Length: 206
Image (cartoon, rainbow, N blue to C red; front, side, top):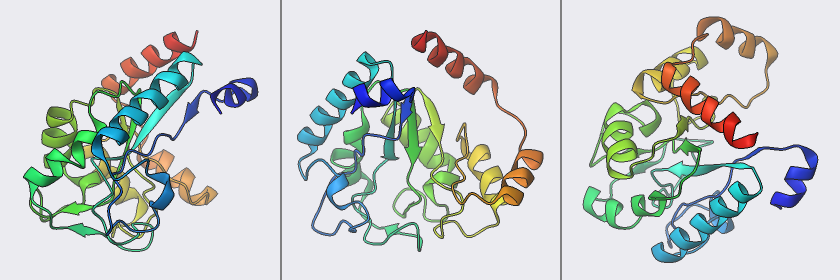
């Protein structure tokens, strides 16, 4: 796959999916998950990232910090995961550690034992304490699609809240030109961290 992407000029792929598969995992993740075994997910995830990097292609690990415990589809509604933080850390969250990926994409999920009020994409607690400190992800953090039904605000507010919480880039996938133009006018800035990391990415490609 990476060889095909490279021949086409593609230099980023939104892969691998590092969500841990469980009996309760919603089918939207389904076969995209590598395994129901944490060690297998970690091993295959690292191998995927390493292989892509070898071919000068960046990866986007997703859906950080983990979508496997969600029983609903975040495209359609907000999943609420009530699993205790200790259990999530041991299994779901650990799948994302030490992957050396340039990019990661957030999960639109409420982890009620950690932040009962805000979806992870909008949660400073989740992004700072779990993604940045516990998982130790050091790359560019991208929100999942802000037009998904899991987020309850309008696009501009969803984007603003994502950036304020600690996301570096906002992903908008619906493809509405008017909405895209509105977002670009309202959310024009890129922070210094993202500029630095983007420079590192382009140096990697050269």
